[in-house]
Length: 173
Image (cartoon, rainbow, N blue to C red):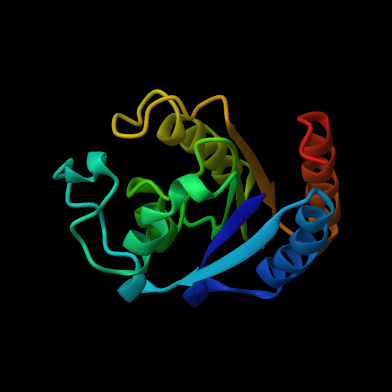
């Protein structure tokens, strides 16, 4: 099985590196061959809303378009994003908006040391809405997305343990 981890390379931190390092063995143990896409601003232009991507090819020629062309090769997409004012980073949001998510399973992990309970709640709520019923281009994703938030390295262990358990429950191992 193939999977991809998509992250904002310009906003990496000790917290995100710790999560990323912990994800690899979990996903490998679950049988995934993982590719990592570290995206920056020049790799992930915003969606233009042209709806021409319905044929599987985006008219914007960047790294996100390359991922989008192979989206059906992935059984799993993991988004690793800093939480900024309760939302994804712009780079990760652009990748999500342009349809880089696996149609079988997605995991969204938001992180940040300065996230309060309000930002955490906004992130979880907005992610559910963005990936669910409000997503008019990529409908049907709301039941295939798990959302996690981590604010410190100690929480990373619990987050990774929960991800491993959910992967096992859904038959990923």
